[in-house]
Each structure stands twice: as structure tokens, then as C-alpha cells.
Image (cartoon, rainbow, N blue to C red; front, side, top):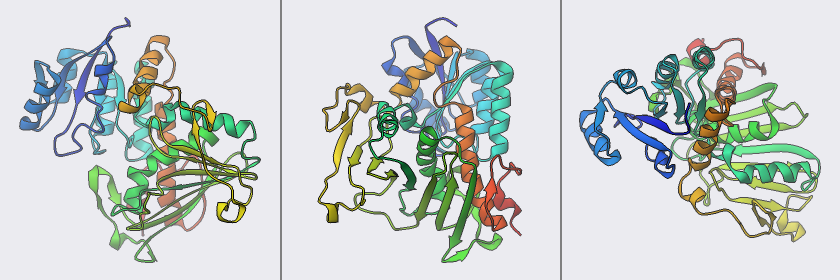
Length: 368
């Protein structure tokens, strides 16, 4: 493939729209040209075609892929019910894919997408911006250098707003679970409880999830993941328990301190050099962390802040050119989907579950 790329955009007005700017993020790259857009909502399609300044617009994304033959397709909708079909359709046509999170609804769908990508030798990247962040690399370097001592545990929380519990696990948890995996690797086991109004979820209180998530349940999630290095990671979310400022993000605890990492391309990262983990008792203070280190000014440009997809797309284009896997590849995406599924599977069986999961579908569909 040449160093210049054509992109076709898929959106769904009213059903996830165009994600978090996945349609326009390509404009920051002079070697990329958006050539077409598909949207099954005719009025939304017309408005988006005008905004993107493309002459080719389609209500059928498969027809768009067949006729325009782009190098890349941007799968933009936040709704996840069509993600698998769209990604497989692109891969079958030899088209590379950059797509919104969540990746897909089940490990089985992830398996199908990966198989299609492998058969056609196409690249796929997922819009988990923090995985591409240079600040994530700084966090990993600080951990490796012993800045927080011996690694002990990871604590992650969702936004815990009206979506708290099962929906929060899917919509925001996908980010923080990806952050955990990017630092600590794929977990070995999961033990979790998912409850509704204080009681274990049952088939009677499951429901069709919003944003095309499939069968969903729970207004509170408490999950523990066992990591390969002997530490553990926690994810928790309780409906309508949002903090101010929000607790959404990841804290990493070591024997001599804490690192806090929020979500985004250039997120807030803070360091506390306090073995008690209690600045109120120790008198220690949180310090900002930049890509240059603890307490140092940030040298990176503001372009990375303005476009949350900039680094992801830059890596994606490089992966296509160099024939390698993107940083946020479908294997990493499948691992996150499997972590989420494992939470519900552990609740279903009432015991820890090991990875890889034996059952690849939605665990809630198998509730007794």
C-alpha cells in the first residue's frame, strides 16, 4: 500500500452517530483523504456528507465498500450491535479498520472479527486512546524504575452515574480494563458479583441493554482479576454513586506510593510518594506527572490534546505501512471483551472463572 490512504466513514445517526469524532479525526493527516460516508438515516447522511465534503454517500455501508474500495474504513457508531458485522464486512474486502469502542458484544464476535482479519491480512485498531498515550509509557517506566516500590494492586472504577453497574462496565469499563491490560497483561482469572438492588442478578431483572449492548443486568459490579505477576486488579461501579471530581480512572498501588491515571490521549497522571497511601496522615502531596516525569513540565504539543485519536491513527497508519499489529489491536480488544464477559460469567456460576473463557457468548443468556 502507498503512503497515501483513502477512508470511508460509517455512522448511524440516532444509533451511536459518529462516535467520539472518529469521522473527522482523519483531517489532521495530509496523506489521508475521506472519500465517502454511509449512514442508514437519510437526513443524517445528507448532513454528514456535507460536513465531510464528500460527493459519495450511501445508506448501505456494504455498497459503499464495494463501490469506493477504500484503503481504510472508520466504524464510528457508539452503538455496538453492528460492530462485528461491519468489521467482518470490511475485513472480507481487504479493508483496514479503525473502530469505536466497545470492540464488540461477546468473545465469540471478537473471535469472528479476528479470524476475518487474519484471513485477509488486514489491520484493525480500536479507539482506546489511553493505550496510545505517551503518558501510559511514562507510567510503565515509573513502575519499572521502582517509583512506587513493589507493585501491589490496581483499582479501577467507572463513572458510576445513571449507567452504573453493568452498563458502566461495558461503556467506560472498556477503557480502564484496557489500561490495566496494557500495563499488567491479560489476567488469569476473575471473580465477581453483579447485583440489582442489593441482590444477585437473575433472569427476571436482565434487560436489553442500551447502545446495542445485548442482554444486560446489574446496578452494581464488584470484580477482582488475578494478574500474572501475583497482584490483583479491581473494577467497581455502583449506580448513581458518582464522585465530584469523578473517580473514573485507574489507581496503581505500590509499597511506597500510588500512581493515578485517568483516561484520554493526554490524561491527568498523578504521583503520591507515600507508603501509607494516606496523605492526610503522612503530610505528603500529590504531584503531576508529565511525559518527562514527576513534577516536570509537559513538552508535548497541544495537537495531541485536541484530537483524542491523533496518536492512535498515527500508529494505525504506521502499522499498515510496516505490516505489524497496531498498538490497540483486535487481540487486545478481545481480551477486554473477555474480561467484561468474565464478570457476568463469574456471577452466573457463583465462582471464579479462568481465561480463556470456555463459553464465548453472552453469559446472561445462560442464566437459570
